[in-house]
Image 1: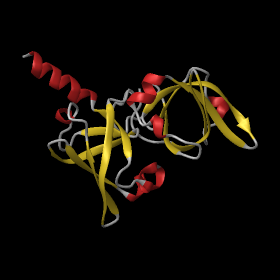
Image 2 (image 1 turned 120 degrees about the vertical axis):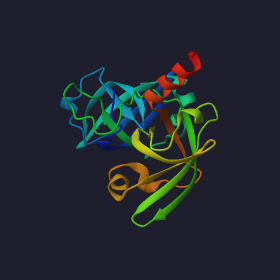
Image 3 (image 1 turned 180 degrees about the horizontal axis):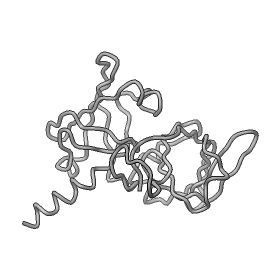
Image 4 (image 1 turned 45 degrees about the vertical axis):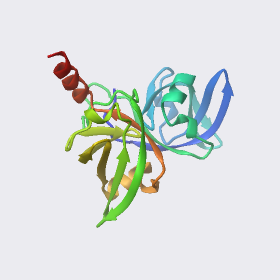
Length: 199
């Protein structure tokens, strides 16, 4: 489980297709503190660490990604040099600063527009039609692993505001219209909708 509070921006150092996709990600995390088999959310996708270390003064960890994950997320867009939002798994006793995020991406949303409003930036997205019903004003979503509050919803289009701190600490400062982002709907919204359908 995760909180959607990004703790590092990693850089893809290498990608190799051999059966599955094997990716090496540069990080500020101390590899000595990363267990093999640990979960790290990479742009919102929960991935398992298969190796870790330091090379040429650079910390890194490796992950192996199945074709299913590549096809259901934006991982197919990744390239050497791509920057990713990273978050270590939640530990018992950690502060829950965002909302409960599973790291299981529900779909991909398209960035429609990016507009500066004062110091903040308003970003509008189009969600996949089957997920739009789970997105509500003032509710939470995880976009590329970041816990964000929804401002408004119009059909399958919704908007969020990103403050300067978030732009500095995540990849959101480089977002532009036409980008694709990983979308995970709020777990609570999913269960509320399911209960409504059942009744």
